Image (tube, rainbow, N blue to C red):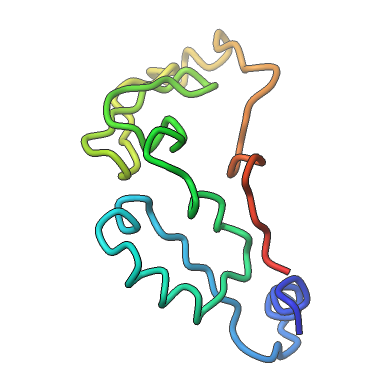
Length: 122
């Protein structure tokens, strides 16, 4: 059974051959454990397609995993303490719900994993 069928059967309660695996490994974990982690991940393949950063260098990590601050498409400012960890929000574009009507939503935004270098499970 391939990954797509396994996930579809699992969310439909139709008894897949095994429970789908989502490794969802943060870059910091890859940095710390390197080849030992690769050996484990190679034995337990990802079924949800989240292997998009396995072959990236530190400089290629998306902004949310780079040390420092960055602003996302919605205007939220994120602070990342260490390379490879996901940041935490430190400033929000809507400070309270009474300002919601004044908020300018982005016309285009990049939600989800990047498409460049993404390896979806098959």
